Image (cartoon, rainbow, N blue to C red):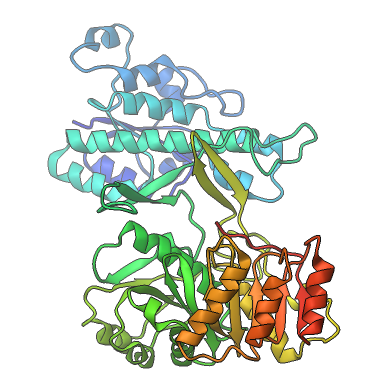
Length: 530
C-alpha cells in the first residue's frame, strides 16, 4: 500500500496533478525545496523533508535528503527491518518521485562553464533513486513525468503498484541513473587543462534506447535489435513513423538510413524535389527535378533492375501522382516527410511495402551544429574489442570550394551537375564513381577495389539502360591515382570531372583531362565511405 510519498523534482511537469491525485488517495506527501514550495502554493498538504528528519537543509540545498530517515525509509525491508525502523523512528517511504538536475541540458548550452556544470550534478537525487530502485520489492520509484498517468491509474484501482510495475520502474530508474552518470563522465573526461573540450573524451559512454527487437540480423542466423540515441536528432530515421507494411528488418533499416540521409541532403526549397533509390546501401538512382514525379522517373531510369526491391526516398510530400508513377514496382521501403491522403489510399494495395514518414520539424538547415540540421555529429564502427569513433561526414561542397585546374572551364550547367554528382558520390560505397547529367544519375559504379573499374561499371550500367553517357559529368569520391580513370571517362564522352585532388600524379591527371578537352574541378574534400 502507498501510504507515504517523497516528491523532489527538477522537472515539475504534471507535478501538482500527480500530488493532488495522491492526496485524494490519502497518501502523505514529503517534499524538498522548490518542489515543496510548488505543492504548498497549490494548497496541498505537504511536509518538508527538514521537518521530517529534524535536520535543516544546508549548503545551498546540497545537503537535504542525505539522511538516515530518508534512506532508511527507502531501503527498509518490510517484515525484516520493521523493529529497527521503529526503534530509530524511521517511517517507511513507499513511493519516490524524483527527476534529476538538468545536467544534460546545462552542458548543451554553448556558454556553459565548468562551475555551472558542477553545480548541476545531482547527488541526493541519484542516491535516493538508487535506494528506492534497489528496494523495489517494497518501494516504487517514478523518474519521468511520462510515467505518472499509468502509475496513477493503477493506484486508483488497487491502492498499490504491482510487483511487475515496481520492477519495470526500478529498471527504468537504474537506466536513468546510468544515462545521467554517462553524461557527466562524457562531459568531464573531454575537458582539457586549459578549459577547452576535446572532441573525443578519455572514456566514451553511449546511451541507447531499444526501439524494437528484429526478426534477425543481416543474415537469418544472426539476432538483432534496433536502438536509438537517447536524444535523437530531429529528422533522423529513428523518428520515423511506420504507416503501413510488414515489420522492418535489419537490412531494411540500414538501407533506409542510407536512402534517407542522401535524399535529406537536398533542400527542397533550394535544390527542388529529390528522389533517391537505394539497393544494398548504395544509391542506384538519384535525381532532382521540379516535381517528385519527374525526380522519381529519372532516378528509376538510371537502374530499373536494381530498383526492384529497393528503398525509395523523397525529400518532399508524396502525392497521388508520385504513387501512380511508382506503379507496380515492388519496393521494400518508401520514405518521405509526408504523404497526401490520396497517396496513402493508393499505397494500400502495396501491403508488403513498409511506408515510413519521417517528420522534418525541428530541422534547421542554416544551423551551425549538426544536431539541429538533423545530422549525426559522430559515427561509430565496431572492431574487434574496440570502437572507431569519428565526426560524421557532414561536409557539403559548394561552388566556392571548387578549384578549376583544366584549360577549359565548366559551364554553369556543368557546375550544377558536378556539384550534384559529387553530393551523390558521398553516399556511394568507395571506390565511388557517379556519371550525371541534368541533375540526374546516368550511371553509378560502387564498392570496387580499383577506381577505374568503378568508372567502367558506371558506363556499363548506363549502356544497359540505354542512357547516353556522352556529354555527362563524372564525380569521384577520392583522387585518381592514375590517368586511366580519366582516359576511360574521355572514351565514354564525359565532358567534366569533379574530384578531390591530392594525388602525387595530379599533373598527369589534369593533363589527361586537357588532352580530352574535359573540364576538371578539384574540391579538396574526400568522401570515402566504407
